[in-house]
Length: 90
Image (cartoon, rainbow, N blue to C red; front, side, top):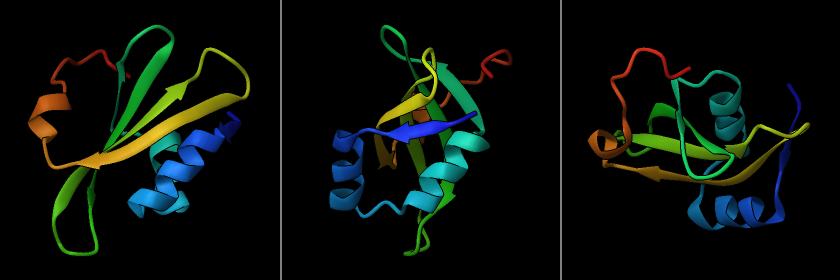
């Protein structure tokens, strides 16, 4: 599947210090995908950051269009808030 990075997402990645290769890894091999609002879905992966701490990287994607568009991405330490244990998420 092809992906585009929205200008908004590109700016947020730069500001938040999230490397593009990490985002691409999450969108191509997410640990889970959860529905968000409207046509958006959050692609999740737990990532060990450079400082040795584990974070959840949430990449918000509209994959109902082709190519799919990454609209935002951010890391959070609140893994339990966003992580879903449902088995049929992907």
